[in-house]
Length: 185
Length: 365
Image (cartoon, rainbow over all chains, first blue to last red; front, side):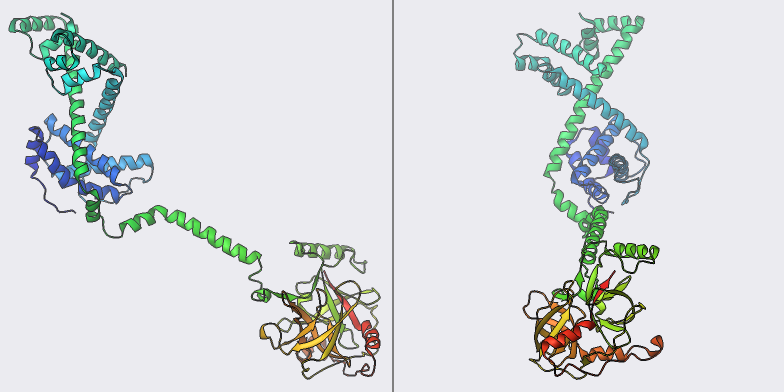
C-alpha cells in the first residue's frame, strides 16, 4: 500500500462535476504512483502505466458526469480496480501473462464500467476518424462551434465569411457531411 | 428553413416561443421528425463528449509531463526490482544460452581429446606409434575388420593394412614380445611381422598403462621360437652420454637409428623414462634402446614435438619391474627374461644383423 496525501473522495466528485481543473491534477498526483507500481511490477513500463491510468481517469469522469456514481467504495479502490482490469486485458493481448497479476490493493468488480468505456472509446475513435476525413475548413468550423463552444460570429470572423449566415450555411453543410462520414463508419 | 437547421435551432433554444411551440406540435404529429431530432441530439452529444474526452487527455498529458516519473518509480518500486524483472524476463534465454555454452565447451574439449587422460597435459608429447589412418571412424573400421576376419576364419592375415603400428622385441625364447601399451591400446587384434615379412597372431597377456608397457604372446603355432636371444636387459640405470641405438619399424623395413642418452628423466621430469637424443618417428614405439654392448637399456616410446633431440625411452629397470609384476597364476608360471648377452664383442653391423631377427613390426587392427 502506498500512503500519500489523497484528496477527500467527495471533494473529487464535486470537483469533477464542477469541471474544476485543479482536481484533475490532485487525482493524478495522488493515484498515478499506485498505478505505476501495479503496472511496472507486472511486466509493464512507464508508458503502459500512463495509458492505463489515463483511461481509468476517463472512466471515472464519464461515470461521475453520467450521474450514476455511487461512492460505495473508496475512489482509490475504484481506480485501482479499473486499471488492474485494463492492464490484465492488455497483458492478455500481448500474451505475456495468462491472468495472474501481483496485487497491491483491494479490488472491485468493474466489468460494466470497462465495457461502457470500451464502447465509448470505439465511438471516440469513429468520431476522430470522421473528423479527420472531413477536411478543412469543415473540421475546424465544427470543432470550434460544437466542441470549443465558439459563437457563430467568432467563426465568421476567423474564416472571413461576409456574414454570419454564410458561415452558418457552411457549418450545416459540414455537419451533414460529418454525419454521413460518421454513420457510414 | 432546412429541417436540420430547424432541429438545431430548436435544440439550441434559438427559436422564438411561437416557433418552438409550432415545432413541438409538428414533432408530436410526425414520428419521423421526432426520430431525427433524437438522433441529432445524440450526435451533438457525442461530439461534445468527444471534445471533452480530448480535452481531458490533453490536460492529463500536461500534468503527466510535469511529473518526475523517475523519482516516483524509485519511490514505489522496491530496490532490486529491476534486476528481478530482468531476471524474470530473460531467465529462459539465459538458461538456453548457458546450456549451449556448456555444450559447446564440453563438445570442444571432448573432440579435442581433453578427456583423454594420457594426452591431457602432454600436448607436445607424441607417442610414437605409427598411424596408417587418422580417420575419425577408426574404431568402427577396426571392428568391421574384426568381423571380416571372423567370417573368413581361414585367412591367416587380414588383407587390409593395419591401422596402427609399432615395434616389438622378443623378451625370451618362449614367444613373449614387449611393446608399448599405447601401441596396442584399444586393439581388436594384434599381429607381429618379422623381418622376412611373415605375420603371426598374438594376444596381449599383460599391460602396464602407467609404464606404457605391454607384453604380447605369439599364439600362432607356425611361429618358430628362437633358440636363444643375443641381447640381455640392463638392470641398473645407464649413465648420461651413453651411446645408444634402436631398431624399429617407422616404415615397412627395419630401420636403424643411433643417438645418446641426454637426460635421466623424461618428459616434464618423468623419472620412468630417459631422454634420448635420437631421431625416431611414429612406428619406433616399442623398439629396444640398446647400448654399444647390446644390452637393452630402455624401450623407445615417445618424443617431444617442437623440441629438437628430445625423444624418450622407458628405463629397462621399469620394464623388468613391469614384467615382474605379471601375475604368475594368469600364465601358469613366471615370465623369464633373457640374461645372456652374446653381442658384447661384436661390432655394430654384426650386432644389428643378429638383433634384427628378434625385432618385430607390431600391427594393430
